[in-house]
Picture (cartoon, rainbow, N blue to C red):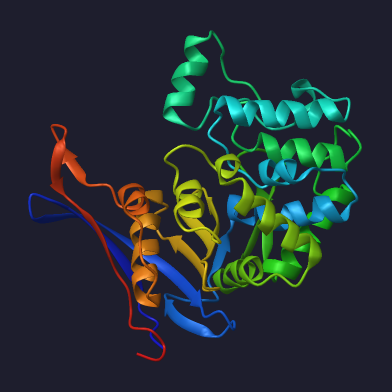
Length: 315
């Protein structure tokens, strides 16, 4: 099985301007390796790609969440009105408000949403932070305890346990950008999480996967890779994370985990397209346009983003 890295090249005017190295593990629907690039055992901060596992911990705690609330709990949302309304409603249903959120104040992640938020006179708030759905669900699971983010809090211990079980082993931990614990797992562990989303045997993980599939608009946002993939290829589940991390379950059961070495999230789309080609899945035009937009100069295409992958294990 190949162990060289995958690469994404950005060209401008025919010259390779930038190269992104990508570690990648792709599993067949039966869970066996299909393609590997880089070291599957390499330690990776899964960042927001681990939200499905953290949401499993929230559900196991007995938190009362609707299916839409499960989707927003696993989201890195763009801060569009539908997202802010979903988080606000989740909190209100449990007697809480955005003031109870422990995530850091921020502006919406989506460019259009951020401009609208600023135009309405708002500054950075915890509600607008892209992880506010996760925090709202955690806060509910913790019974409103303001200390819910402490690593030794029972909820965070449960989150670590769920991550270890579904995407582990957990090799270490620090603090994520939102303030919640950030866990380190092997890249192969993230692939195992993706396979679990594709072929869930755990009831809580099955519910998370179903909720994300049903409401891809809540999981990311307009013109975001996760949302467009799940919309254009029904049956998919995708969750990207900061610093170029992605877990994805494709409609045929193929599982994908990727980590861009330099953290450039723009490399994830071309890699995903290359994997879809490798497993023989058709790529809708809407997905291709978002996953690998042209490199532009003065508003017109002057280059492209393309991925090169190792040969499959049976190739």
